[in-house]
Length: 154
Ligand SMILES: CC(C)(COP(=O)(O)OP(=O)(O)OC[C@H]1O[C@@H](n2cnc3c(N)ncnc32)[C@H](O)[C@@H]1OP(=O)(O)O)[C@@H](O)C(=O)NCCC(=O)NCCS
Image 1 (cartoon, helix red, strand yellow):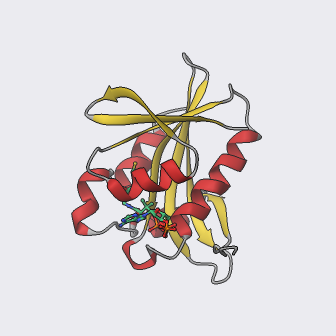
Image 2 (cartoon, protein in one colour; image 1 turned 90 degrees about the horizontal axis):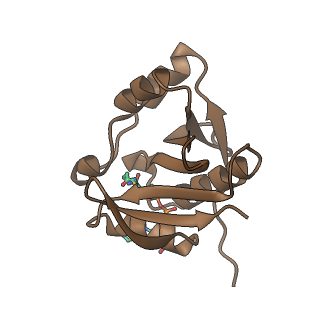
């Protein structure tokens, strides 16, 4: 049996209006310790030449349903997924998985090594499950209290 996932587009947040829309997106209250606010992330991206912040747009409605951000680690020459969030109103509908898959495809076309990594809070069981399903493996590394998970892009 095949499972259908919603199509998403990853969009650059070029205009002030898109950035404002992105800032309104929120996770559930009980998830707020797992991720910075989008306003904080956009500020961080503005200060870093390595970060690319992207909105997650649902193709069938055109609505912005989430946000993600990746960065190149120039020392490791690997990609890091710094943020992935789906607004609380749209969670549980497959957008998180669709956004992660779209990001991995996007990263394959970018310069850099074949590795991609991320950090996740140990108690964030939903995200850990999603990442494990998509081929990320916990390496045993712990950075700032977060479990590091890695996979190859190809
Ligand atoms: C993690 C997150 C992005 C998932 O987005 P989502 O759109 O709700 O996820 P999906 O509907 O695509 O679900 C994909 C898979 O994730 C896992 N998952 C997501 N939420 C889960 C939950 N509450 N409990 C258990 N598993 C969960 C499941 O494996 C699910 O697949 P399944 O439905 O086939 O079992 C979203 O919950 C979120 O924004 N969380 C807050 C921010 C955050 O923690 N980001 C990660 C930081 S590292």
